[in-house]
Length: 155
Image: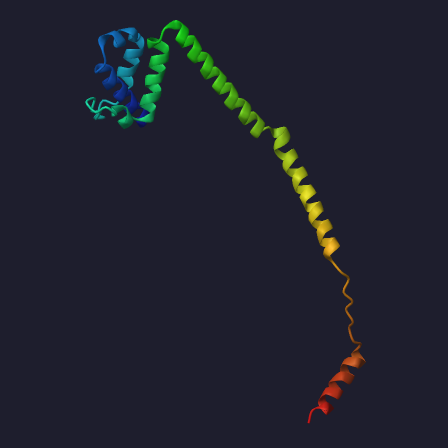
């Protein structure tokens, strides 16, 4: 486990140790052993339970573990089924959004089509705005003649 996860487990154990016995009795012994084995023994948990907003001081990972404990051990069976159903719907929705956003069939298809259309429109606009400019280049003898005239034209 990562160090942050071990610290979160230590916070969970601290919270459970400061909870009512009825709550901790509902949690399986196997899961409690898992928590005790994976907690960071050197991490000093600093939760002030006298503070009304003590839950703002705990790690995000701690909140996740507490939510799992709540869902799996503390709620009645009907509520657990409802929570699992809501979680599955949320995950399905997120997966569908990701599938739509990163669908390999549409990912390049739409962008290439849009890009090609934009390029064609730009070329059409540029060609409509272009005018033919006639460039007249003097022949070699006209260039020499103009040089001669410019030399004699000076006073």
